[in-house]
Image (cartoon, rainbow, N blue to C red; front, side):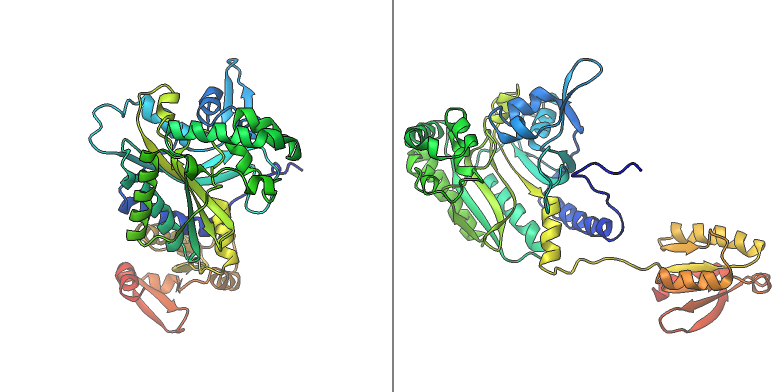
Length: 416
């Protein structure tokens, strides 16, 4: 028997309906913020992610699905959304004559080779959004508010935004040197990954999962102490805007995020003060890194599967339609023909409709009515059909009546 690959899963039944509901909420919210939908290819040139995400990140070093295709090209399955969206932005020259920000959101499958665990798989869905063209702190506040409101609309109330600032290039470089100086004499007391990160990307040491509680990391220099005047002023202005927008946030000076391209604000959405659901930040140099001009950008990505898991664990009421509108029952071949065209007509008029396709007896069809939790059932009878009549029954009140077959759609419109 062929089975699905480790770290992947099938989406069907109630899970599919829950995801459809979440999609509906997120789509509607993005429309209010004037973000348009984008979908990028599931595979791209490996260079895109190696340059964009960063050679020193765990994602590129340990987690990407890389392969050589039949044209001898190095290809990588999409591990995150931002780099592909930036490639699209550059390739379509959307940076020309920017008079307003370019704002897009995505909802796509991603692939990372990591140990599968609850809410984290090798194939997973990521919802996120990107804003290009504005370096105003107002755009930072907008993406944070969009992320914050998404979770609240999904019914997760105990949400906190953790924020930090890496500052501009000067500030980040100063902080990087301070970290190297601090960690160098202590690095042997940290894990092997941290030792490898010291020269390549010392900020990643602060994001270590193995040594997160180690006093060496807890006592490391703080990013805010190395911000220059302009970067500190920008960060303070962001906090003022978040206060005005009534967004629940805390400053976490150990928050650096796991990707190389961030500068200025970085943030995470945290549930119950401990469960990270998603994160993002500003990446003013990424467009240029990937071959475009210098265009500022800021964005966010949600762990979609972890979010649905959190909604279930917090008993959020996720509306699931487990019923149909109409079930048509028949016995004879001529009644079956009527069921065929009536089913088509009802579906095209917006009603969820079923009829038998398994050759069941009338008794078996009545059992299907119950299994589908049908609101109405229609019994087709040749004698009544000769007079253009059908019998319709309200499955809740058990009331039934004969109506003209041509009045069926109007009848359902009035009673549904």
